[in-house]
Image (tube, rainbow, N blue to C red; front, side, top):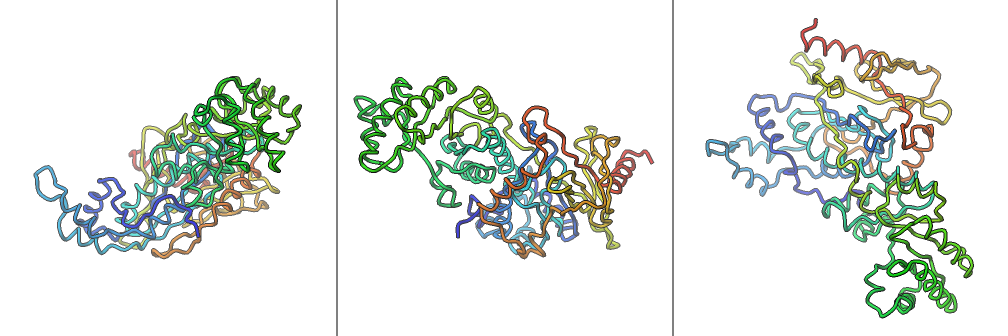
Length: 489
C-alpha cells in the first residue's frame, strides 16, 4: 500500500523549534507536564485572497504522531546543547523523561480534501500539555504547506473549466520534501498527474511528461528530432514545437504524426511553452485539424497560474491540457498559509476546564477559547454556513453565527437544516482510530466539496464571503474573557 505522506517520520521528534523543548522542560520542572490542555490549529486569512481553502497534510501529521519518540541519538544531541552560562541546557532527568515519553493525547481533525475557512480549527489536540506543546511545529509544518498548495491547485483547476491540469513543478520546488509534499497536495487540489516520478511511486499519482528543447537542439533539425522521438516513444508523443518557429514546429509534428499513424500509433498532441499562447494555440488547432488530427491535444506550459489561465480562456485559446509548475508548487503569490496553533483550555485542579484566550490589539489575532468543533449546515445539497462551537456546552438546533471580526454581522441557521460536524476522531489516548483514505478518494472529496458551494465563493475577484461564525454562546464567552483580560470587568 502506498503512503499518503511524503516523508518517513521515524525518529523525527527533533523536527521542532527549540522553544518547544525549553517550554516542555519548564512544564516538567514546574510539575505541569501532565496537566490536560487543548490546542487548536487554524489559519486567520484565506490564501490568495480566495473565497475558500482546501485542507491537506493530515496524513503526514498522522504519520508523525504515530512514529513520535525521542531516539537515543536525539537524546545524545540534546545533551550537547548549552545555555548562556556554558552549562547543559537540559538536565539528565528531563532528557530521561523525553526518552521515555509516549504519545498519549487525543487528536481530532477535519479530513483532507474538505473546504475550510479562516478561524475554523483544522486540528484539535487534547492531552498532557507538554505533549500538546511539543507537537506544534511539526503539525503546522505539515498542514500549512499542503493546505496552501492544495488550495492553489484547486483554483488553477477551476480556471481551466474542467480541462486537465498536470503539475510540472519538481525542478522549481523548495527542496525534495517540498517537491513531494507539493505533488501530493496538488493532486488533492485537482491536478490529474505529476511529472514527479518519485511522487508517482510514493503516492500512486499518475505521472506524465513529454520532452525538452534540449532533445530538439541535439539534432541537426527539428524534423529529425521529432521522428527520432516518435520511433523511440511511439506511445507517448507530445511534441514540444516552439524551439525555433512554433507554427513550423506544428507542421513537423504533423509529419511525425503521420509517420506514427502509418505504423499503428497515434500522436497524442503538441506542447506550447512560449509566445502568444492564445494566437499560437488557435493557429496550431487549425493546422492539426486540417491535417487530420482533430483529437491531438494542445498542451500549454510557461509559468501559468489561475489568473493567466482564466485570461487565456477568455481570449479564446484552444488549449486542452495545462501544465502548471513554478507558480503552483511554490504558491508563487503567497509563500505561506500563516496557520497558528493556540492554547484554548487547561484542566484546573478542580477537574474543570479553564478557558484560555490570547488577547491582541489586532482583532484578528485574538484567539477563541474552548474545546471547539465546526458544524456545517446544508440547505438541499448546498453548504450554507459553518458554526464554530464549544463541545462542552454544545450548539442549539438553530445557532446564531457571529462573525469573529465584526460582532454586528450575524446569521441564524434554520433548525430544519441538516448538518455535519467536521472534526473527526483521529487518535484517542495516543492510539490511532482513523484510517486515511486513498489519495484518489481525498482528491474526489475536494471535487465533491467544491461542487456544494455557491459559485460566488469560488470566483477569483471579490469572492462571496461564506458565512462562518462563532456560535452565539461561544462568542459571548470569548467577549467575557476578552473584557476580563483587559480589566474591563
